[in-house]
Image (cartoon, rainbow over all chains, first blue to last red; front, side, top):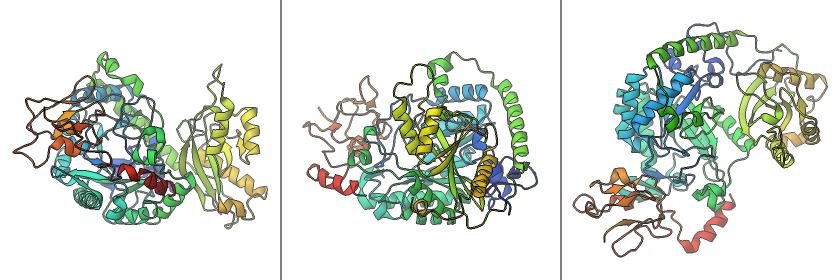
Length: 491
Length: 92
């Protein structure tokens, strides 16, 4: 049988729909071409595109009209990477200047989003002033917005006017009883409303907004925060409903609830999901729905490729000193975009993996990959801030998720507490049976082996899917996959 | 002395855009209410808008210096029941 790359595309190139869409061809297959055209170079919507195209968020929308138990409104922090956190609030004018500066300096930047730290639609003047100026001054940048949905129905016409073709709605529940455990109150029609009544209004507005957007051909992605014991089972129904109403992608994200972040859930001891729990739920939702698995839950002022943050290069004082000729930048940006599209095209046409004769009953295996992007194995084990998790099975190779880690090897003299960080890193790889990287030192090699994870540096600079398929085949040939290991099934 | 924003304000901006009399200003430490402009929303709304959207219990006080949103009123958990709620949530 053929070991294929699941969700990949081998279709003939014809415009973007079969080129840039790359691994998302399957996810997006039910969409008309005109909508697929909108997402092929959107890093947040396409697993393939996020290796090549960059995005940025501008923090112009600080105010919020609801309270979520996973949010702390004290957002001013430079060291944390999570939604809602920013180090600098911008006026619409400053935001436009920053966007032009980033787009000129990072030509692979295709998308500008407004995602808070509050709710962009609770700050309509600031949000729409920014969009208005950008659609005039930088017509080559896609605009998108992320919202809790409460003020969405009243904003849909204005959104459509500014040619915003991507909206993300965070929908954590469709049942007010579940919602009441997540949202303590909302500010609605000039009053604070609490409890179940509040959740019911929010849910109604979200669903209405979703429907209004899809009716206008505006693309909708739905984000959901997985909260164990609260909405984990319920999210399967959420997934089903939002898909039936026309959302094109569902992104189930893990709750972040460290006590030091000061959120209600964090302080009250609500746990976040284990990687396996998240993966199982994403798989369960995937039956009915296209799932997004490469989300990095980035800051509301993130800049650059997903998984990296170049915000420090574009602080207010730095952009103040920059002279931007955006007309010239647009020419260069178009060239860069064309060459990336050509590369994606080539990538899409490459044969994904060698044929094998693996028994269809062989068990699946998770592998961790150290990669700085580009879809290849190109990072030293000790330098990885995150690992990409892939699953190999007789049905093929598929991307599952990424897992963050503190990288332990800074080089030089800063390796002081390297060992404990290394143990933590190995802990985050639990469930994986191999780790593929460009290089790895003796010490982590031994510790990984002791933890039952096979280190592998033999596939440096190879395409991830090819290498994972090759390692899986070696495991099969070595007889490591023939019997289903009860322990692994339980894990 | 009417409504006041006190030092527990976290500068979240929520109150500023909903004030009908433009009485809320950013200040060096935290947002403040301009006494001369504030009407406490009388004639405009049933309830002061700033206090109705503020997410921080105790951050806005009334003329008597009492919290407009007393402890427990926003999280939905009365302070004496926090321990029990905490145990229930931890068990999830």
